[in-house]
Length: 286
Image (tube, rainbow, N blue to C red; front, side, top):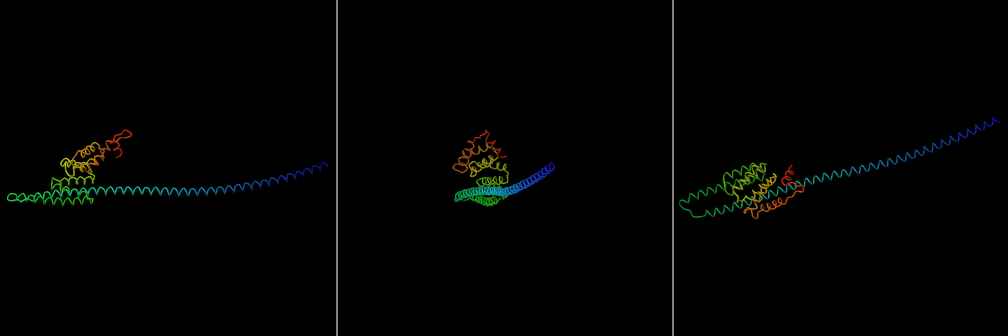
């Protein structure tokens, strides 16, 4: 009886253990299936995120390329604007120079006409030698004018050394008068173009002192004021601007108008940090 009961118990226990094992296996399979499903979903989500990140990276690269292209275009535009501004400035200088030359030549023609009219008198006896001398001077002036025009053409072609030598020959030929004054002025411009500013200032200073009421006096003083301004010698610049305003020859000229504007700007200058105009100028030159 006891043996049968024990056997039955063992059999029942075996069945129970077998059932538990089956349940455990089923649950393990279910958990594995759930885990596989989660991994599949994670892989899918990761791939989706990766694809989205790649798309964003491509878009960012495209935007960066567009910004770089815009920056290059802006630099190119700035360079073109600077070049155009420089060309306009150079053309303005050439036009002003040409106008000055035309004015000078007109003044020379008017002066020659007056001299020719003055010579139209009846002469006799001892006056013949004076007429011959006048003719010789006239020939010298014609030669000087030819040389002056050639030097002027050389200047506008950028042959500044050749032009300087031409204007110097004109000055040495006539030595005084309107043509000598004009030759000195253009000699100084040639020197400025080849960065010999000190020599140019010396010539301009001598011109102003020798011909204070001359045709080129106002232009020479304004040029000196500009040169001293570029060197931040504002006191000397102011002196020449004031000389232009006080010189009756410069009345109603472009130089007088520009001198008045520049002098007013200098007098009204005020620095926000207490620095002088000269200090600000020298810092800008660095």
